[in-house]
Image 1: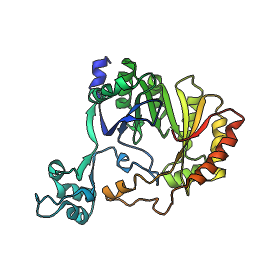
Image 2: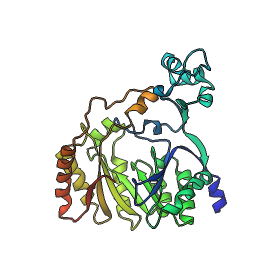
Image 3: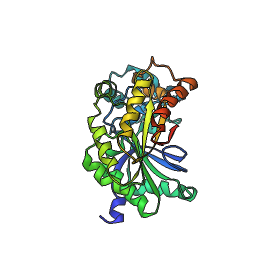
Image 4: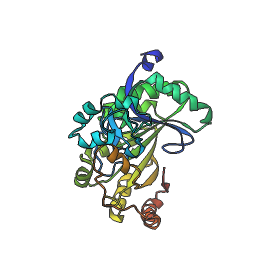
Length: 308
């Protein structure tokens, strides 16, 4: 395909976060793609899980505008399912004056997305660039490839954040167009992984082993530290042992502290937050766990830091 053909490839995007300082070096433009095979109980982006656009209602933003006899929050509560809710609310997302009710996720062409990326390009300097995230960007492999190819064609640094749960053929088509791969390792215990994410980790760990045998791209392993799941010395030690078994290809390990910023999104989607009873980790607890990981990788001179 020619560059112009790649610009016409379509995908479903639910957010474009500009001027981000996370998910890669420098200033990033993070493009969030819809769809994820995992159902992590603590997921901070539940609106990313379905491939299809979804209705969201930020009820506190409703100003009871008076356009309809029954206010949107009332219709929302009375609906018995997402399908009934969509039918009952009809045109309201398109005329809501505050955006309280809206569709999350829109079909975009790669060319349209790249037009937004280019607006940030003057601020990238030598290290910033495009990061594909989600959701799980590998759920839309052709669209992801189109964006990476277009960015690379313009000399823009490319990164992909992934859970690793995809067929190897998808990685084979994406890796050649990446400068950086941010790879999540949540747990090495397959049964615990399945219990709390919906899927076991066999494919995830197997893919990471194969990637570690390749010369590129730069590889960073990221560990979301989740209370009630892996926020304990034994789990983090096991993850460190696995990462060290990959040899020298891993550039660093990032520990990502659990947060509850996505909690309100569940309510906006009409869903219950599954990790409701788990508290946030204190700074002291996080530092204690970070010290455990640092001790494990110290001998291998593998950099470890909190955040990423």
